[in-house]
Length: 467
Image 1: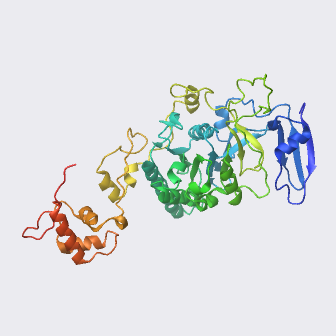
Image 2 (image 1 turned 90 degrees about the vertical axis):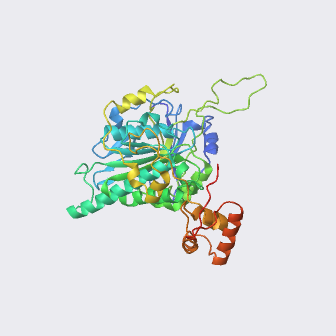
Image 3 (image 1 turned 135 degrees about the horizontal axis):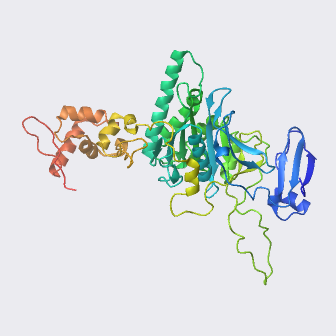
């Protein structure tokens, strides 16, 4: 390549464990660190290339040809620094497996545009998608009406994931009866994906559905791929422990498609520790601003107007590819500048045709307790729902409630006898309460006007309180 300097280095046995990129650039006399690319090869060899400018700065727009799945089950998302295509596999025709995938990146790193490209590719390739956009639908708003199911709340996401697990179980039973050990695309079932954008909101510590969400995603990653049901999550690059626990993701992602955009140091340390990046592999940092030389200016010098403009969106490493340490970048997806409404370029890529597949009937996967608590409120589920299904009120924590609170929470409007009340308190999960303590508390509640005096039937009846 014209004007490119290339150095082939011999490395110690086992490769380079750590290297100082800035020191290397200083040694080569290059002020713009983004022009220097280091890549470790096979065996005891590494290559350093010095480009006249960063080769990933000028990217073309993504096209429909890029996003139609090829015969090997891949789509082309972008390019590596040396011009090689950046492939992302959605299906492995050799094994019949759907894929498990994850996209990590800090805010503004280009995560949502990459997810848009995957969603468009699925629609154009006849893949059924059930999508959770946990940024209240704002991350990928153009996906509304372009996928079989689209939900925007954590509770709806749980219902969607339950539906996907149920579909996985149905397919396993059906294929076993057919004598089939793997998935054959479109015979009779379509390739299907569950995609959870902003998954950190569902899986972070303190999230109301964290444990069940992690369990369902892990189950889909473990059993779904062999029956054509894949799972992809996109999340902030913070720390794997904030994503349902590292064990959940470690096994699911090691053999999947893992893309790392601009990251945080904590995420990098965890990825290495969990084996998602081979020990000894070195990744060149992805700065927010590429191509700007930071230097001390004299008192009468001024900086360029654009010297602090973020321009590294879409730069990434495909960690589970054959080139995990080679920097790549996605093609441009949609309009460069923000739009006042839906992005017309993205809508053009989706196309006017209806999305493949049928929506998941979300309400069918509510438990009896949840359905009773919800009292029939919320949307009707599925892709056509115009209003989200509201999560039922969480069950009270009886372990921290007083005896009086437990009695009032247990008593139905029609009341209970002392015997039935004692039985109900014994089953509510709280500490054991003796009969004498219950009777004393009932007497106190009666004095406070919260319980009516028992009638001839001996029922203990609560008195409705004004709000």
